[in-house]
Amino acid sequence: MNFIESILPNAASIPDEFLEATIETLYMTLWTAGLGFALGLGLGVWLVLTQPKGLKANAAVYGVLDKFVNIFRSIPFVIMIALLVNITRLIAGTSIGTTAAIVPLVVATVPFYARQIQNALVEVNPGVIEAAQAMGLSTGDIVFRVYLKEALPGIIRVSALSIINVIGLTAMAGTIGGGGLGNLAITRGYNRFQTDVTIISTIIILIIVFISQAIADRLVKKVEH
Image 1 (spheres, one colour):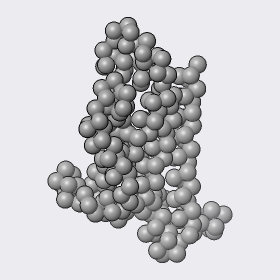
Image 2: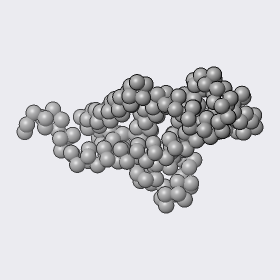
Image 3: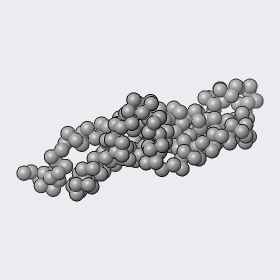
């Protein structure tokens, strides 16, 4: 028995399970980020456009969108999974499994990311927006050429924060058989008193988080110079 097997006996015996769980975590995270960020970005832009003094200020529309974001951000993820079980089955064809977990993950991510995007966009200098309007730019041009361009560093930062949040949510996907590192840490590590499995699962999750943050930091430095 080598040194690693002596200090991590349970973890050393299931390398394939760690690999599978890591792939499941990345699968859920990447699909959720892709879908959730696309929808959240659109929702965040509409929040900025329709808010008071926005380019398309509309109290009724903003009120609905704002309440939608607040309500869905307030629902605990485990409860969200239960509430969306029928919708999940309709979209994914099943209510259990890794793919099924993506549905509630996306629904939970969209309002969170939308609010982060809204906060990033409102930091854009109002003077720049006014100058763009004076030049006769359309609302679409202002969104893409001013708002998103000027707020890009902030958008990257909130995207990194949101990815880390998604990784945390995937740990609860095990309640519907979603798998992943969080599920492995609980079902194999905690429930069976295999502490080393929990520790290794946590370390792998931290590595994914650190890599995500490092990539975001590098991108921010690149766009700011």
